Length: 275
Image (cartoon, rainbow, N blue to C red; front, side, top):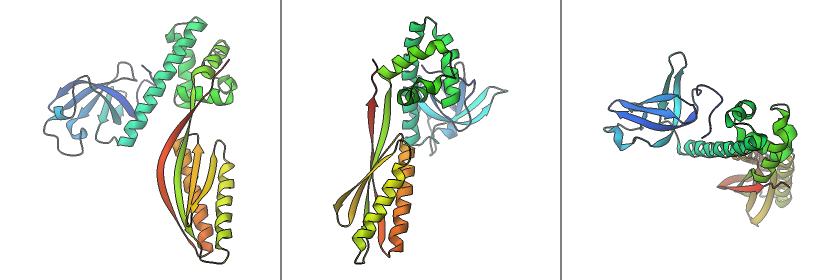
Protein backbone atom coordinates (compact mmCIF):
# COMPACT_ATOMS: atom_id res chain seq x y z
CA UNK A 1 0.00 0.00 0.00
CA UNK A 2 1.17 3.63 -0.51
CA UNK A 3 3.86 4.78 1.88
CA UNK A 4 4.52 8.42 2.63
CA UNK A 5 7.96 9.93 2.15
CA UNK A 6 7.64 11.78 5.47
CA UNK A 7 8.38 9.93 8.70
CA UNK A 8 5.46 11.51 10.60
CA UNK A 9 2.08 12.90 9.49
CA UNK A 10 1.37 16.59 9.89
CA UNK A 11 -1.13 18.11 12.28
CA UNK A 12 -4.47 18.54 10.50
CA UNK A 13 -3.69 15.78 7.99
CA UNK A 14 -6.22 13.05 7.22
CA UNK A 15 -4.83 9.51 7.37
CA UNK A 16 -5.93 5.94 6.75
CA UNK A 17 -5.67 4.04 10.03
CA UNK A 18 -6.35 0.47 11.16
CA UNK A 19 -7.73 -0.18 14.65
CA UNK A 20 -5.23 -2.33 16.58
CA UNK A 21 -6.64 -2.44 20.10
CA UNK A 22 -9.62 -0.96 21.92
CA UNK A 23 -9.78 0.06 25.57
CA UNK A 24 -12.36 1.79 27.77
CA UNK A 25 -10.51 5.11 27.48
CA UNK A 26 -9.68 5.00 23.75
CA UNK A 27 -8.09 3.03 20.94
CA UNK A 28 -4.66 2.49 19.38
CA UNK A 29 -4.44 2.51 15.60
CA UNK A 30 -1.67 1.83 13.09
CA UNK A 31 -1.17 4.40 10.33
CA UNK A 32 -1.31 2.57 7.01
CA UNK A 33 0.68 5.20 5.12
CA UNK A 34 3.39 5.66 7.76
CA UNK A 35 5.32 2.45 8.27
CA UNK A 36 5.72 1.50 11.92
CA UNK A 37 3.76 4.47 13.23
CA UNK A 38 0.82 4.16 15.61
CA UNK A 39 -1.65 6.73 16.83
CA UNK A 40 -3.98 7.03 19.80
CA UNK A 41 -7.62 8.10 19.72
CA UNK A 42 -9.15 9.15 23.03
CA UNK A 43 -12.76 8.13 23.56
CA UNK A 44 -13.76 11.81 23.52
CA UNK A 45 -12.53 12.03 19.89
CA UNK A 46 -14.57 9.08 18.63
CA UNK A 47 -17.97 10.74 18.16
CA UNK A 48 -19.52 14.21 18.59
CA UNK A 49 -21.92 12.84 21.21
CA UNK A 50 -21.23 11.05 24.49
CA UNK A 51 -19.78 7.59 23.88
CA UNK A 52 -20.88 5.01 26.41
CA UNK A 53 -19.32 2.02 24.67
CA UNK A 54 -16.44 2.71 22.30
CA UNK A 55 -16.98 -0.67 20.62
CA UNK A 56 -20.22 0.65 19.19
CA UNK A 57 -18.05 2.83 16.94
CA UNK A 58 -14.76 0.96 16.48
CA UNK A 59 -13.81 -2.66 15.87
CA UNK A 60 -10.37 -4.31 15.82
CA UNK A 61 -9.08 -4.55 12.26
CA UNK A 62 -11.40 -1.79 11.04
CA UNK A 63 -9.92 0.76 8.63
CA UNK A 64 -11.02 4.36 9.10
CA UNK A 65 -10.16 7.87 7.99
CA UNK A 66 -8.88 9.84 10.98
CA UNK A 67 -7.68 13.39 11.46
CA UNK A 68 -4.30 14.04 13.06
CA UNK A 69 -4.84 16.52 15.88
CA UNK A 70 -1.43 16.42 17.60
CA UNK A 71 2.05 15.17 16.68
CA UNK A 72 5.08 14.94 18.97
CA UNK A 73 7.96 13.45 16.93
CA UNK A 74 10.33 13.54 19.90
CA UNK A 75 8.08 11.20 21.89
CA UNK A 76 6.61 9.43 18.87
CA UNK A 77 3.09 10.40 19.92
CA UNK A 78 0.33 10.88 17.35
CA UNK A 79 -3.20 11.79 18.50
CA UNK A 80 -6.12 11.07 16.20
CA UNK A 81 -9.76 12.05 15.92
CA UNK A 82 -12.70 10.42 14.19
CA UNK A 83 -15.38 12.91 15.16
CA UNK A 84 -13.55 15.77 13.41
CA UNK A 85 -13.69 14.06 10.01
CA UNK A 86 -16.51 15.31 7.80
CA UNK A 87 -18.13 13.05 5.24
CA UNK A 88 -16.69 15.02 2.33
CA UNK A 89 -13.21 14.86 3.86
CA UNK A 90 -13.50 11.11 4.36
CA UNK A 91 -14.46 10.59 0.72
CA UNK A 92 -11.63 12.82 -0.46
CA UNK A 93 -9.07 10.92 1.62
CA UNK A 94 -10.28 7.54 0.40
CA UNK A 95 -10.03 8.79 -3.17
CA UNK A 96 -6.50 10.04 -2.50
CA UNK A 97 -5.57 6.67 -1.00
CA UNK A 98 -6.87 4.83 -4.07
CA UNK A 99 -4.83 7.16 -6.28
CA UNK A 100 -1.79 6.32 -4.20
CA UNK A 101 -2.42 2.61 -4.71
CA UNK A 102 -2.66 3.13 -8.47
CA UNK A 103 0.60 5.10 -8.46
CA UNK A 104 2.33 2.36 -6.48
CA UNK A 105 1.16 -0.35 -8.88
CA UNK A 106 2.41 1.63 -11.88
CA UNK A 107 5.76 2.28 -10.22
CA UNK A 108 6.14 -1.45 -9.48
CA UNK A 109 5.61 -2.16 -13.18
CA UNK A 110 8.20 0.47 -14.06
CA UNK A 111 10.68 -0.90 -11.52
CA UNK A 112 10.41 -4.37 -13.03
CA UNK A 113 11.08 -3.00 -16.51
CA UNK A 114 14.04 -0.91 -15.31
CA UNK A 115 15.39 -3.89 -13.40
CA UNK A 116 15.31 -2.42 -9.88
CA UNK A 117 13.52 -3.44 -6.70
CA UNK A 118 10.63 -1.37 -5.39
CA UNK A 119 12.58 0.02 -2.43
CA UNK A 120 15.02 1.60 -4.87
CA UNK A 121 12.14 2.84 -7.01
CA UNK A 122 10.55 4.36 -3.93
CA UNK A 123 13.72 6.29 -3.06
CA UNK A 124 14.56 7.39 -6.59
CA UNK A 125 11.06 8.13 -7.92
CA UNK A 126 8.36 8.11 -5.25
CA UNK A 127 10.06 10.37 -2.71
CA UNK A 128 11.06 13.22 -5.08
CA UNK A 129 7.70 13.20 -6.88
CA UNK A 130 5.72 13.27 -3.63
CA UNK A 131 7.85 16.10 -2.29
CA UNK A 132 7.26 18.13 -5.45
CA UNK A 133 3.59 17.34 -6.17
CA UNK A 134 2.18 16.28 -2.81
CA UNK A 135 1.10 12.93 -4.24
CA UNK A 136 2.73 10.74 -6.87
CA UNK A 137 -0.40 10.16 -8.95
CA UNK A 138 -0.70 13.93 -9.41
CA UNK A 139 2.80 13.89 -10.91
CA UNK A 140 1.75 11.07 -13.25
CA UNK A 141 -1.30 13.09 -14.32
CA UNK A 142 0.96 16.03 -15.05
CA UNK A 143 3.09 13.81 -17.30
CA UNK A 144 0.02 12.44 -19.08
CA UNK A 145 -1.15 15.96 -19.78
CA UNK A 146 2.10 17.84 -20.44
CA UNK A 147 4.73 15.22 -21.23
CA UNK A 148 7.65 13.60 -19.43
CA UNK A 149 9.50 16.93 -19.33
CA UNK A 150 7.36 17.78 -16.29
CA UNK A 151 9.41 15.43 -14.09
CA UNK A 152 12.67 15.28 -16.04
CA UNK A 153 14.68 17.19 -13.45
CA UNK A 154 13.23 15.30 -10.47
CA UNK A 155 14.18 11.67 -11.10
CA UNK A 156 17.08 9.77 -12.73
CA UNK A 157 16.98 9.73 -16.55
CA UNK A 158 16.82 5.93 -16.76
CA UNK A 159 13.25 6.01 -15.40
CA UNK A 160 11.90 8.54 -17.89
CA UNK A 161 11.21 6.47 -21.06
CA UNK A 162 9.72 3.59 -19.08
CA UNK A 163 7.46 5.82 -16.96
CA UNK A 164 6.41 7.84 -20.00
CA UNK A 165 5.12 4.76 -21.80
CA UNK A 166 3.36 3.36 -18.73
CA UNK A 167 1.73 6.68 -17.84
CA UNK A 168 0.46 7.25 -21.37
CA UNK A 169 -1.06 3.78 -21.35
CA UNK A 170 -2.73 3.73 -17.94
CA UNK A 171 -3.12 7.15 -16.32
CA UNK A 172 -6.54 8.76 -16.44
CA UNK A 173 -6.83 12.53 -16.25
CA UNK A 174 -10.04 13.48 -14.43
CA UNK A 175 -12.00 16.59 -15.23
CA UNK A 176 -14.80 17.84 -13.05
CA UNK A 177 -17.95 19.43 -14.44
CA UNK A 178 -20.32 21.33 -12.19
CA UNK A 179 -23.76 22.40 -13.38
CA UNK A 180 -25.61 25.41 -12.08
CA UNK A 181 -28.45 27.67 -13.10
CA UNK A 182 -28.89 31.41 -12.91
CA UNK A 183 -32.22 33.18 -12.67
CA UNK A 184 -31.69 36.62 -14.15
CA UNK A 185 -34.15 39.42 -14.77
CA UNK A 186 -33.50 42.97 -16.00
CA UNK A 187 -36.73 45.05 -16.18
CA UNK A 188 -35.56 47.44 -18.91
CA UNK A 189 -36.18 47.62 -22.68
CA UNK A 190 -32.63 46.42 -23.35
CA UNK A 191 -32.73 43.78 -20.61
CA UNK A 192 -32.02 40.86 -22.96
CA UNK A 193 -28.92 42.60 -24.33
CA UNK A 194 -27.67 43.37 -20.83
CA UNK A 195 -28.06 39.73 -19.75
CA UNK A 196 -26.34 38.45 -22.88
CA UNK A 197 -23.45 40.85 -22.39
CA UNK A 198 -23.03 39.77 -18.75
CA UNK A 199 -23.00 36.07 -19.64
CA UNK A 200 -20.61 36.43 -22.58
CA UNK A 201 -18.20 38.59 -20.58
CA UNK A 202 -18.17 36.14 -17.66
CA UNK A 203 -17.73 33.13 -19.98
CA UNK A 204 -14.88 34.64 -21.98
CA UNK A 205 -13.03 35.74 -18.84
CA UNK A 206 -13.31 32.28 -17.28
CA UNK A 207 -12.23 30.50 -20.48
CA UNK A 208 -8.94 32.37 -20.39
CA UNK A 209 -7.91 30.24 -17.40
CA UNK A 210 -5.89 27.13 -18.23
CA UNK A 211 -7.85 23.89 -18.37
CA UNK A 212 -11.23 25.59 -17.88
CA UNK A 213 -14.18 25.44 -20.25
CA UNK A 214 -17.39 27.39 -19.57
CA UNK A 215 -20.63 27.14 -21.51
CA UNK A 216 -23.98 28.91 -21.05
CA UNK A 217 -27.32 27.76 -22.43
CA UNK A 218 -30.78 29.33 -22.38
CA UNK A 219 -33.44 27.33 -20.52
CA UNK A 220 -36.30 29.77 -20.90
CA UNK A 221 -36.76 33.11 -19.19
CA UNK A 222 -35.50 33.84 -16.63
CA UNK A 223 -33.30 30.73 -16.35
CA UNK A 224 -29.84 30.18 -17.80
CA UNK A 225 -27.66 27.10 -17.35
CA UNK A 226 -23.89 27.09 -16.88
CA UNK A 227 -21.52 24.13 -17.30
CA UNK A 228 -18.01 24.53 -15.93
CA UNK A 229 -15.38 21.91 -16.70
CA UNK A 230 -12.06 22.18 -14.85
CA UNK A 231 -9.13 19.99 -13.79
CA UNK A 232 -10.55 19.57 -10.29
CA UNK A 233 -13.57 20.39 -8.14
CA UNK A 234 -11.90 23.23 -6.26
CA UNK A 235 -10.92 25.00 -9.49
CA UNK A 236 -14.43 24.60 -10.86
CA UNK A 237 -15.91 26.02 -7.65
CA UNK A 238 -13.56 29.01 -7.75
CA UNK A 239 -14.50 29.74 -11.37
CA UNK A 240 -18.22 29.50 -10.58
CA UNK A 241 -17.82 31.90 -7.67
CA UNK A 242 -15.95 34.36 -9.87
CA UNK A 243 -18.55 34.13 -12.65
CA UNK A 244 -21.44 34.57 -10.23
CA UNK A 245 -19.79 37.67 -8.77
CA UNK A 246 -19.22 39.22 -12.21
CA UNK A 247 -22.75 38.50 -13.40
CA UNK A 248 -24.30 39.85 -10.21
CA UNK A 249 -22.25 43.04 -10.49
CA UNK A 250 -23.33 43.73 -14.08
CA UNK A 251 -26.99 42.88 -13.47
CA UNK A 252 -27.19 45.04 -10.34
CA UNK A 253 -25.81 48.00 -12.23
CA UNK A 254 -28.71 47.57 -14.66
CA UNK A 255 -31.20 47.46 -11.74
CA UNK A 256 -31.84 43.77 -12.34
CA UNK A 257 -31.77 40.69 -10.12
CA UNK A 258 -29.73 37.50 -10.35
CA UNK A 259 -29.61 34.36 -8.22
CA UNK A 260 -27.56 31.17 -8.43
CA UNK A 261 -29.08 27.67 -8.19
CA UNK A 262 -26.55 24.90 -7.49
CA UNK A 263 -26.46 21.51 -9.15
CA UNK A 264 -24.44 18.34 -8.56
CA UNK A 265 -20.88 17.94 -9.80
CA UNK A 266 -20.01 15.34 -12.42
CA UNK A 267 -16.64 13.70 -12.97
CA UNK A 268 -15.49 12.71 -16.40
CA UNK A 269 -12.22 10.86 -16.99
CA UNK A 270 -10.13 11.14 -20.12
CA UNK A 271 -7.89 8.15 -20.65
CA UNK A 272 -4.68 8.77 -22.55
CA UNK A 273 -3.32 5.76 -24.40
CA UNK A 274 0.22 5.46 -25.58
CA UNK A 275 1.71 3.59 -28.45
